[in-house]
Image (tube, rainbow, N blue to C red; front, side):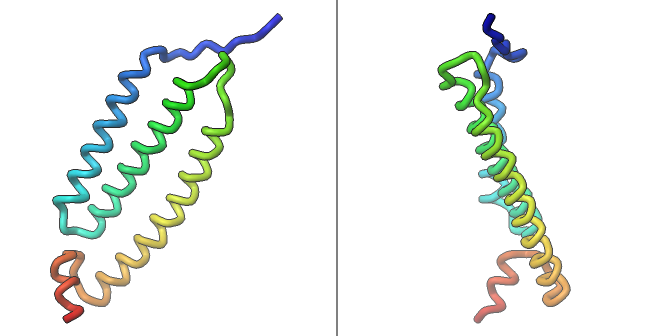
Length: 113
């Protein structure tokens, strides 16, 4: 007797549309904002969209009814590494604010000349 796992959410296109929405919001925020903390949030949104796409496509291209745990493990590892990177980036942003008193990227970019 084979045990099959039925996915509770069968309409994958809604998940892909939400992932595309996250991607568009992250790209817009990354391109338009001048604050370093908003840049960091935009990068995290882009990473979340990539994680959601990775999990969704692993479920779409699955050959069996059983969910493959490898893509989920890769995404969990990527979330952990991304959290560490975000923590280091936030520490650097805090130090830049203490040193220069601003988080504006254009103002900090003009300091190098």
